[in-house]
Every structure is written in structure tokens, then in C-alpha cells.
Length: 403
Ligand code: F0G
Image (cartoon, rainbow, N blue to C red; front, side, top):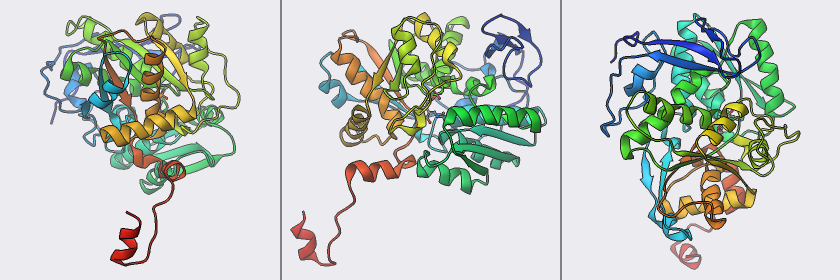
């Protein structure tokens, strides 16, 4: 489909703390301990923002890989205008939902994994690994299967939605439940990757975030740059990636503004929200995170510093929402707009509703909410909050009696 290496592209890894640059690619953090990001120094742009979406690899001239990608046609997700939600709010704004649940594995993680697993192959790795609240593991297992390499997954036992575990298992990953939370699983898998030589595909991996920045590219491609992006924040990779995407569009002369990055967390797992409210540059970990939105049940987000910078630099904000607000927003989106999402994704809509109520949204704003994962990821929560279907005898009368 495309020819690789992306022509004329020059890039390196750069530390966001000390600024040190590395030409090596097989590393995740700087020697000073800081997070790394990919700095694209030069490239020959091979796409136009012409509204013609083709998926993640349309933007290959801003994606730092050197071989033919491992792809399952990720990206090119629908962007819906949500007029019923607009009518419901007490401020006149334009609301769009970018439904990332429409990716091949049902979440935005596929954008990162197509790049991350390609990088694993490029670096000659025969195994990839991650800790996950579910979606990362499902996506990684799928791309590892496509690439023909091994996948190892560490999950917080009993705290991952059923659909996600099913995907990781069926795609052939070795799935290990640990008696602990995501933050502990991430610490363990980082050590295991170091000693076993597995390629780590959590969002601390800067190449994975490169794939996820294409969410920004697709939005700009379809409707131009909006005033605000609202999205759920867990390990804080996606908000950092999308911000980087918008910044690159400006840097390479394709657009001229950056949307206000607005991160939403669950009340029981809210370290980024607290840091932003208190004007701090880093988080204090939440020791025992808890929320119905298990995807974002994270107390110590690894990308917190990148995310907080994205929020401050873009003049965005952070908000927290309760489990009830999340479920209510999930129902609104499903029943009024026909968009089925998992609880974590609904946090973006819950956040929009809350910010509008608090008068923190300006009249006339054009807002894009990112819904990160599909409804079918978490069927158990649906049954819990909607109840089981009615069961009746197999007769017309019995059915009529309950209509
Ligand atoms: N929404 C969903 C559906 C997710 O699965 C995640 C993260 C997020 C939002 C938050 O994104 O971490 O980049 O801030 N899920 C990870 C996982 C942690 O393991 O699947 P983030």
C-alpha cells in the first residue's frame, strides 16, 4: 500500500524533562528518569487535510517507522454531530463525538498498537508485553497475533471487563491476573520486560503514542481544529498523544490553532484532576483507585506530567465525575444518539455536562468528545445497570402482556 521508510523523515527520542536526545529507539524513559517523546525533526508531508479519511497510515509521513506496518485498518472512525446532546445543555455549543469504539478491537488503542507492534518487529523483538485495565491487552494481543509474535498481558485480577479479557485470550496472549491493581501490574511488567527482553507496549512507550496522535489528525481532517477536546484520562497517554498531534499540525503549517485539552477522570481515580485544580505540575498517587469505569481505574498515571503540560499549555482543564454521572452519560449517549460506549468513554460526556453546568464552557464552542471504547467491551456493567431482559412463555399473548 505504502513505501517505507517514510521519505525524508528524521526523528529522535527526546526527554521532556532534561531535553536530552537519543538516536537509539529501544528505550522507554530517559537516563534521568524523564518521559521520552518522539521529536520529528524533518519530514516530507505526503498527505493533505482534505477530508478524505483513510485510517492511521494516511499520516505515515508523521509516523516514525521504517518498515511496512502491521495493520488491521485502524482509524477512520466516525465523527458524529450530537444535536440532541446540544439541546440538552444549558449553553449553546456544537458537540461532536469521535467514536473510537469503531476501531478493529473496539478501542482507540489500535491506533497506538499498529505503530507499537510495527516498532517491535523493526527492533527485532519476538515478544511484546503490557499491563492493562483491558483494552490495551485486547489490542496488543490482536496485533501481536497479526505479526506472529508472542504477547504477555498482566491484568488486575477480577477488575477487567469481560469482553476485553475474552479478546486477549482468543487472540492468543498469555493472560496473567495479578492480585493487585493496574499501577502494581505496570511496575511488575516494566521489570519483566527489562529482564526478559520483551517489548513494552504500555503508553510509556513513546512510539505507541505516535499512533494515537492520529485522532487529532482525523478530527482536523474532517472538521478543522475544534475549540475543545474532551476525553477520559486513565494512564494519561491519550490526552498527551492527541495534544502532540495538534501541535505537529501547527508546526508543519497545516493548521493554526490548538484546542483546549480537557481531561475527565472518575472521582475514585482522580490524581490528574487534583493536580490541575491545585495548579501542580505532577500528581500525588491515589492509593486505592476505584470506579465503575474499570478502564480508567488508575491511581498513578505514568504519563501524568505530559498530560498536565498538555492541559496547561492548551489552556484546557480537568474535571472529575462520579460513577452515577458516568452511567447516566452512557445511557444518554446510547439512548439519545445511538452511540454505544463503555463506561470510561462516557466519562467524556459526563464531563461535558458537568462543565456546562458549572459555566466553564463558552457559548459557541465547537467541542469534540472522544469515546474511547465500545459498549460491548463491558456487558456485565450493562446488565447491572439496565437489568436483565424480561422472560415470558413462548406465546403471542404472553409477549403482548408485557409490551
Ligand atoms: N478509555 C478507555 C476505554 C481506556 O481503555 C483507557 C485506558 C482510557 C480511556 C484512558 O486512556 O490511559 O491513555 O489516559 N486504558 C488502558 C488499558 C489503561 O490498559 O487498556 P489513557
